[in-house]
Image (cartoon, rainbow, N blue to C red):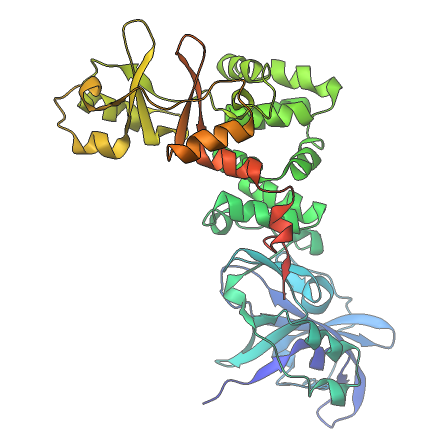
Length: 419
């Protein structure tokens, strides 16, 4: 049996009639209860009767029809409508608003909301982001019904913004956002309004590491936008969990009055790393590099090297290559993690590494770094001082980020609102 689908726009502004078909008032909105159900149930109707906005429970509405909603009962309660926790007004709160489409991690605009009659109750089942369906609200009802639906999005993949529903006491569930990659969450933040972006940041803030990862993926404009709204202590807490090179880039963008106070609030180890990075021009190898890497003595057994990789707090991309040093501290070679896994565990790091690894120097500009990494097919380039000692590493993603034009995500539609 086919499921009956109803467009929200065909019900709102329709007539409220009694069992005899006489008009009682007008339908203002439908109420849904958000919670853990993939398709929220419609729990009531907001109607206007004699200039009063009243609530009618869905149990008193045996059927919803385009342009006409029938009320069953002898009297209508004259108690004014008051929203309960978790309730949303489908038209006022959600229609024509931004929603998060978790399938694909994009923002969509709810130009139409679709309802279905399932197992004896009405449920919110889908959103239609197609711009053309917005005409249904503008055209006469008879003409508007003829506008075909676009490609709908299942409500099970949707999350609304609290900013649109300030009195419903809702929160974007962290568990759902946490399934996305930090870059996808950053795309959502950049496409959203400031208030919507704050909600997303607040939701991921339950996991400090994820929050830091998202901030690292944001463009400089949005990083500053959200950091400026925080106290020095809150900003320092965030920067303490970010990669030192990303934290250094963000500190440079802070207002002069806040840079030193925020820096002084950082843990000692993080503060030292950032201060070192701030000594370099941000567009040189020294400014691009991360001070977190793994460089061990040549005599270290391979089994111990792999254990050091497992326990290291350096970024995973920097751990793709392990470096060896001699007794004088100079770098003597490098080995990929794959090469180490393939080697005999009783062998030494020195017996596995490739000698004289290609490297860059702190004062090299971006083009020189790019040429070196391209010529030698490097995913991780060691940055060495004049004494051939390592001071940091540059990973290929750092170079790509610098080479891509500012605002590239917007230019390529990565942060646009999905239609």
